[in-house]
Length: 476
Image (cartoon, rainbow, N blue to C red; front, top):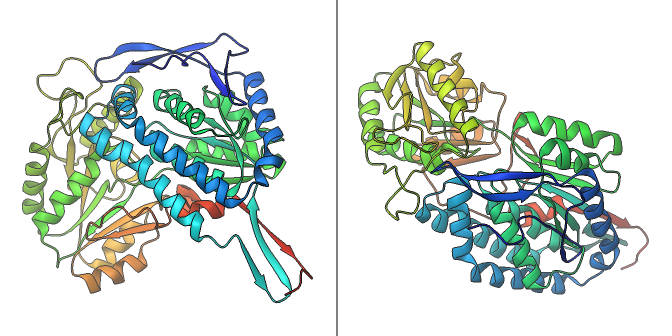
């Protein structure tokens, strides 16, 4: 399944032919079979899309908030109508097992649309402070650069608040998993998004991404991806002093306190780490356990991994699919090899594909024990189904080790609530999860340190796409 529009771009309300001829194959990572090709954009294609967004901005920025909310509601209805198409697209482009694609990947797009609509209705677009009027209005033309691991989550987390704020935009989805982005453009067209408000150009980071982030007519870049790429985006954006919002890498800690049910907490931590085949920036990939509890923890981790079902992504019972690409598979294999070479204990998993599999970018879900803070697997973001378990002698030591990272996206604490709350306050991360809560799409999501800046979700996302204007002397 590949869109009829795969060889075109969506610009100014039309599916247009690229100005260049570059193309790229799209692979199914579960089978290593080519699904088809997409067009790759050039600087000229990017400029055309930015020009369309710029021309549309003044008019769209003046539309009443109620009209923009109604547009988001139409987008939600059109998205819901194509839900199964999105699920199948993400199954094929990124290897998401079909049940996960439906219940997590597609659902994420739905719930973020719902949350943004609710937030926009309650948002303080204007307020009086004495005789000064404070107005929040769209920042302008926005470049949206999204990753392959949570395609619709990240597209909707950028497009929906940008529309709510009255911005116009150019989206560059990941070229590795572009099918869902093409479907999203079809949804925008079906929902009646005004011409030029939403534009899509597929392409590579060095070509389209670099042009978008440096373009003088782009007012803001919202980027989700690796810290390495985020640094380059910020450098590109600096000469034009555009706003840059970034959600980048992570190496999230999961502190299991002595008061926790160890076996249950380890099982929950393993499941959270391995979800989406470990390809989540906020995955709890470093687990901290009380020293002396290693044997029980390792047994619980082995049992949790043994319960995972790896296989055909079209099978509703499969819980883990492949890594997204050959390059990602080789990166993960290299880091597993480093963990072994540096002396960590291999609790389960290891190098190579799971037993009985001879094709696809499938990696074994792997757990390392006896990991020390200086090991590569304790410091680098692996972005695969690999968990590092470290032991601590005191809670203070666990907190210090958890914070000893360049990242600060998410953290996790499990144990008695009063103590867990106290530990959560000490962790240097943008979002701290206590005792396995449900996903809260009204909570701000974003990172400290090299995990980025800015916040997404609901009203937090809308704020990032707004400028603040003070009209002094406006009157009561």
